[in-house]
Image (cartoon, rainbow, N blue to C red; front, side, top):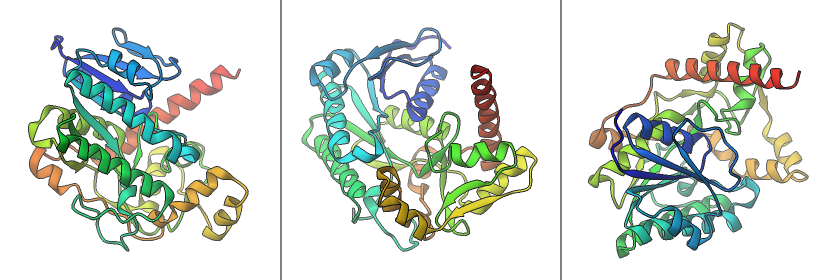
Length: 321
């Protein structure tokens, strides 16, 4: 596709940032990717800039002449409170300095425990967890910056995600990789409850659409997900693709919480267990009415993800030979 002449700057080169990049390339845009470490293989013609997104001087420079800026960064799970807000502040400054639109990727931690009620954008921020309160405060600050006229903001939110490159997700490596060899996939919480999973390429497309549309500005939107099934059904569909009988290993809550006393990462996981101890349904109907429902059918998304993990595991084995 012919280059549009627009510069789109993507902070974060993980699975979400990469999905945004691929969607922008399909639309013919010039893309600049930004990360801290500078190590990633990118398609030919994509510019990669290494730097610290918490540094306003750096973000102002890297965002110069940008049409849209995307915040697809994340902070180490065990250090959210101290590391995540400065990332957002730095990127906001960069977008504001050049007059670019800012599209921010968020999860749904800010809503807190909903007792099975579907999550919609009009819910109050009622989080009681540490990470949920941080996410709620960041969401308020972002939309307040829009209301003040500091920067034009659109926010996309998604549930637990899966897809190519999504290794660390709760529906990532620990679920897909064992299934490739018929071993048990590991899950937390109750696998028999409904749980919305969002496909990473659908997140990328949704964020790019939010960056294009004036109607998206000043609001948060739940990005499209395929039909909600139980975690057990989700995993059974994965095993159907791999050709093995489904095997699921549910980690008992009491064991996880006991181990969390000694393990900082497990402590952070245990804090968010409520998402898997009740039905967890994320409603994207408001987005669909405004922008259309482009969610990839779940079976197709799982098939593509299984094939990505096959390739990933093969290449990893070859590199260890």
